[in-house]
Image (cartoon, rainbow, N blue to C red; front, side, top):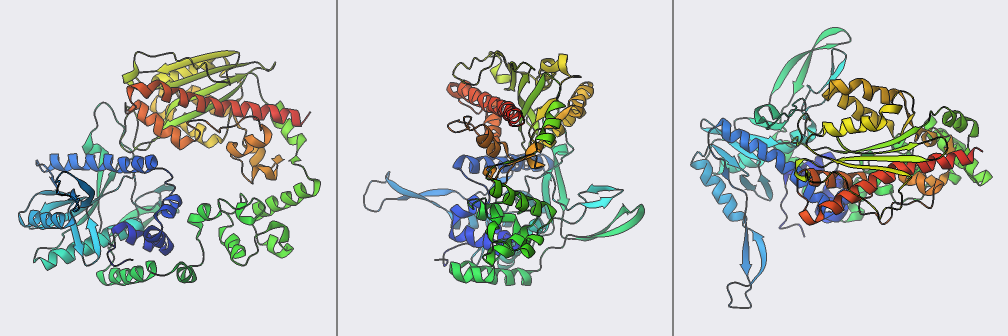
Length: 592
């Protein structure tokens, strides 16, 4: 099965990270994608597009720096003719023309081409397609592109965490494998080996204004050296060794031997070598486990190793745990288990009416329930934004008055291309309330921030603002204040008057096993408000909304689909804030 299989850098990195991951990739790609949270073809294409966008900017930078055009050595597909017919135009499949790509790469190096894009190398069963190679006198430098805004580990310096320490091990494994294969091929062809290895990635401090400045956007960081840096730790100057050394060829060969053996094992044989699932991938293994097991609890991340030990001993039913086993959990875990037994005993949810009443009675009307949707992309699309900045491009706001009436406001930034539309009527939505203010914002996304303030202006210093998971909205408000100092006081005032409704569940004031140990609004809503559901919605999750928003703003949505996509986005965000309102109303009924 594995005789014709190529060992790639990604397979090698996965094996070094966690051997089971490499085995899934080689034997069960669908499971591998699920573990990596790649659930749809659209999602996979989006991830690839993100990486390509950064690669394109590095290519542009290198071409300007070296005043040349990068030689594109990307392997091409060629069509295979149907041998059962004489018709030359009938083909049965396309196949990667690997021999041509390998040949063209060596010829380009012999011809001293200054910048190589996607050169391809094969050493035995190991296959590498590098991002860039740049001529450095008689040799070449390897440049690995990362669609990241960091590649180094954090270290404490002057009381702050700064990413100035050694390069992350997975990235070192990546370029070590590439260097090993490339140098082996170069040596076999009597060519000079690589001179240096660099990473090209995004400058997280870069703020876009007008056109992208690629010299400021892209950072180039050298690996394959040991150096000493100065830092201030515990109020004292300190010298720290930064070791970016690549993995030695002999060690890589040893790892490759282990990799070949492991991915060829049967599942039972493989599991004997690596029994535990490891914390990083618990969600995949236990996502379908019943909530009355220790894997289904909201505590398994903080008790991961202990929970795994219980699981592999067959001791995962909560009701069968001994007192000694319960004592093995941390305080949070023990509280969850004790609440479980209480719910089971009294056959109803645990409701701390005093605490809930104290929280709800402290709200000032009109209560402003609001929610943000954002885009986060590597190469900034909008002025005043940074790489991967969570940029607010949509909001929904329900104002809830003491008599139970509501006003709803929403805003959506669509970029400059939709300048002809400012109002969209959503008559088919069943969630409309007494007053609706529906607006589409164009030109600058700052206008959206100002529109939100206009919607709450009269209530800014008196209302209570309600969100679900406050760290997200509060962080976005701080970001807006930093980008636009003239709006900072107002947005910080919102944070000061914010309450996270999720806390009533996460702090245990309301505890029902039907929520499956989760404080997610998607888990709590069906329990407290069973008549309200996200089922059947075209956009029903934040990551789907994020991709749709990016496509709308960047003009990637076909003209005939624009209004439908916008309506789907608005209904999704609308649902999120109304869900908080309905949960609030349900809680009020519980404490009467």
